Image 1 (spheres, rainbow, N blue to C red):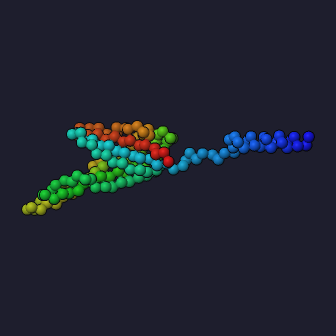
Image 2 (cartoon, helix red, strand yellow):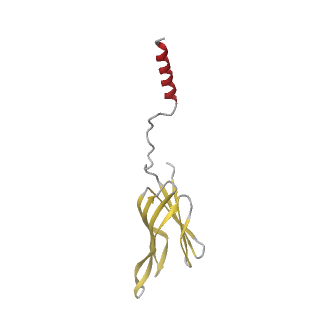
Image 3 (tube, rainbow, N blue to C red):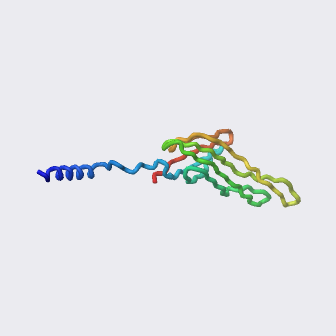
Length: 156
């Protein structure tokens, strides 16, 4: 008879160890996640350009040279593209994106014979908005074109 209580306790222990643990480690909902921010720019003629960066929750910055250039007196003058901002997660479906998207436009400031001097004018958009991950959002539209942003949450 003394073995019966020990057998019952042993069977209960085996049963409980097969089920979900009573003291499971909590899931870390603040674990870092990668996000892809894709900016699609379409000009008035329908030509499309895109820019894509990967980041985590927080700030990001990209300065790059565009593949198209401007000709001034038969010289190719490069133009730059800049994207910087901050992504703040609200929850698993939404976040707040604050960003600046801009580029430089070279222009002639003076000429002497066949030589020209030029400067670069920086133009762009600064904005803040709520994004739903996986859904594109139109953030700028005018006669010169449109800009939309798509933020996706990567599955790590």
